[in-house]
Amino acid sequence: MKKNIFLAAIFMVLMAAACKKGGVLEQVKTTDLTEESTFADSARTMQFLTRIYTDIGFSADPKRFGSSVGVYSICDEVEGSLLSATAFNVIFQTGAISALNVPTDAWTTTYANIRRVNVLLSHLSTTPLSQRLRERIAAEARFLRAWYYFILIKHYGGVPLVGDVVYGATDPVSGKRATYEECVNYIASECDAVALVLPQIHTGLDFGRITRGAALALKSRLLLYAASPLFNGRTDMDGILGYPNADPSRWNKAAKAALDVINLDQYSLYELAGGLGFQKVFTLRKNNEYILATMAGNNRTLEAIWDPATRTGSGSAMPYQELVDAFGTIKGKPITEDLKSPGNPTGYDPANPYVNRDPRFNWSILYNEGMRLNTSKTVTPVFTYAGAAQDGFNFTKTGYYLRKMLDDNTIASSTSSATERCFPLIRYAEILLNYAEASNEAGDIQTAYTEIKAIRKRAGIEPGLEGDYGLADDLTKETMRTVIQNERRVELAIEEHRYWDVRRWKIAENVSNKTLHGMKISRVGTGTPATYTYELINIRTPAFIAPKYYLWPIPQGEVNKSTELLQNPGW
Image (cartoon, rainbow, N blue to C red; front, side, top):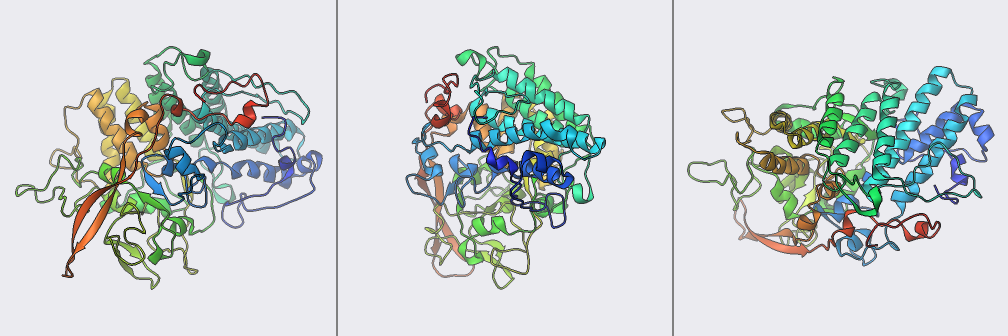
């Protein structure tokens, strides 16, 4: 939104990972365009909109902070491979982050695209497009603007709202921040307005564009955040950082917003026997669970950065033991409550810790002797024990690699296979979890039971004799809250939720100051089958300096441009 916010870039329609060949989001490059020539041509107008789509997934990008480091590496999910003192994952984890070195993309990328939307809307009525197409394009663009504003407020709290104004390079621009409530109301109203125009589905060359479900799903996430403790009752900075009054009824609004998505009857959990749907859904371009995704052509992106060396990957994201332990048993119980015994032979066994686990564990974590495709196109074990060649401890600092979203038939070096994967931004599982959480906080525990059971059923957890999928029948609001928080952690792992969840729940100062661990695995002898010992080891102790770490600092270079732009407290 600032004066120098990439004016020249407005006339470039350069795209990154986009839809499959021939689609409307296909990569296009044009040069030497002006506003007049861009919007006098229907194809270029569509390309301009496509440019706004290009950045939609930047906040969740697995490479956001470097070649292999995303948001998952600045919380308690994985240890990132970038370990220099200036690497973003390190400065976040060590408490060295400041307004001078914080990543600027949450501010500059969002406002650059908000300006692009406003430029598009200002010219749309004069483009040679049909009226019907103009209306749809306007709705898509307004959604994208709301999406970028939501990224802003989850990072910073209330931010300047620029409306439809297009500022020129020399125009004075106010840096006055709107209140958090004003920002939420604006985003919600935009979602409501465009939902009336957008279609429920897109097919053919339009697949991947914004739908009515995406608009309502963004509203669901927005209102869930707004009802959460971080924002629902915050008196500092005159309402800029949250609602000054804590109103429990905001949970009812959040529940209603999630239910609106459910009632579209357009989405469902992708289910296959044995919980395989949880793995398969992430390798499909089209499925009935994705509501919004970063479009991409066939790719091997995640295999390249997450697979270990023997599978030709860089093994750059190593899950902490805390994430590993969050996955319960096949019976839906925490591993601390379902221990193996003579009367419980399928319980958790510390001496053999990777059996009888929640099936999502097997699809999320690559552990010692976990199976993966190799360069010979056969499936063989990966060894992460100390001394194992190429993949073992210390190649993985934690004893684990990431497995989630990887394709069973794809490795990084293969030229003969690739996955159809598109990275998920909103999927139906999140909406069910949103509904469960908001309902529980509003006092409707039964709805929470229903939605958590649905999530666990798809995961492949055993229903048990009572069909409770491991849920105790006497949960209170508080104990159900704990269940929901852990369910989000395992179901939505590595999808840019955990980092923000612990902040909006206002528990980061409790969970983000604790030592994070790995597992040093040692092989005992040379017998077959192999036996191992397991030693918990310290990896790092993050620094979370409450309360300022609940929100990011606005980049100091932006604050310096306007005396009206107030910095977040503590920074």
